[in-house]
Image (cartoon, rainbow, N blue to C red; front, side, top):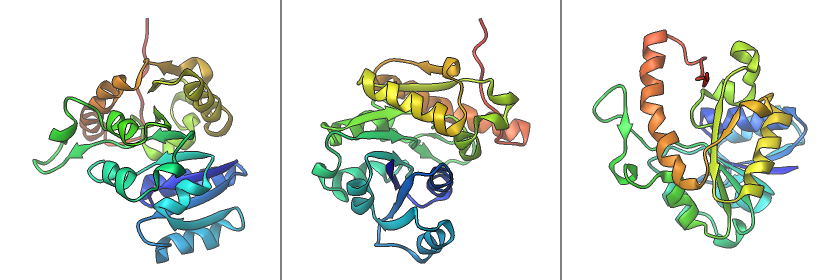
Length: 220
């Protein structure tokens, strides 16, 4: 599959690397046409990897992962990517709109306290299918669920299109070792208000436990 990864930070590079390892063709997108860092990444990964602008990665991918700083993600989707390059595509949004200005743990940015970042991205790309997923776990766990408790823990997913969510679920199971029974569908994209709001608590637990390699499990 051809996949566009929007964002060259730790999360974007981890996802892009794992996707290449799984045999996918991946274009890693940055604000400029291939930073030195991203070019070095592509060289190391081989012929399945390439780099370009945010818009290049969006045009390239049949599936997209948005892995940007939550403060800037909406601006990139709205102003740096041509709308036609998003139409009809599944966008997996792994971003979190966090405000670190008052120290740790962070809070949710004021602009996204009432309406989630994922909802804003869906509004900015009305002909795409935004699926919120992977934003509640560390980047290492995103790409290999087996790292914690032999992959026995839960991941939350939401989005307005049932078929898009189903495809993302299958993708996560087939590529990142998530167990199908542990993928919890919380409904429409509005539910991202809650999954994004988990993350400040996640950071607090991280501080308490001294490791980001943990996850939540619903017991009933």
